[in-house]
Length: 182
Image 1 (cartoon, rainbow, N blue to C red):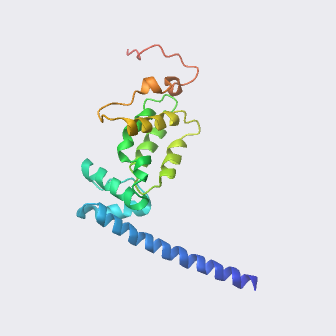
Image 2 (cartoon, rainbow, N blue to C red):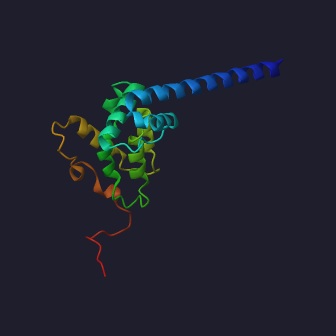
Image 3 (tube, rainbow, N blue to C red):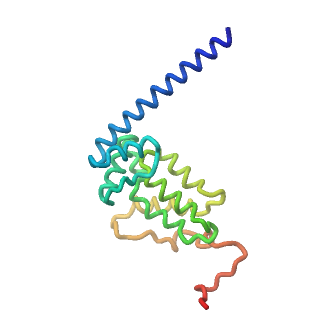
């Protein structure tokens, strides 16, 4: 008797998941049709469905517009207050980090911000956990706050005044100036 109940529950779960997946695929296509240029609809739909960074060979202006539209359609206008593709300039807090030689955090940040189908919490979690010792995450959050509060879009985030430069340096290494070339 228990075997029949378990099999029935499993069958119902599989049917429910299959239905949800096909509905999500249809939703992805509908979102892509309303947010992306006609020639990029199938690429956009696949990007949404697979939670991939948006590219689809779109010019920058169309890429930003499509990304913001997808994010707003999926998660509402308030999601744009948290994080959006234009915040990619804050990923620069992870550049030139001597403790991250493979630039994992910089690449994760850029890839995450270019993925409008990810929820806000998933984006922040991905960036925060790009490395076990991600000391620059707090600086990234301060950069986001700066972008939201600035009244002049040309004003740049004052990294050196706000963030701890020592967080980007390798321990037990003496830094005295530019590298000397032979």
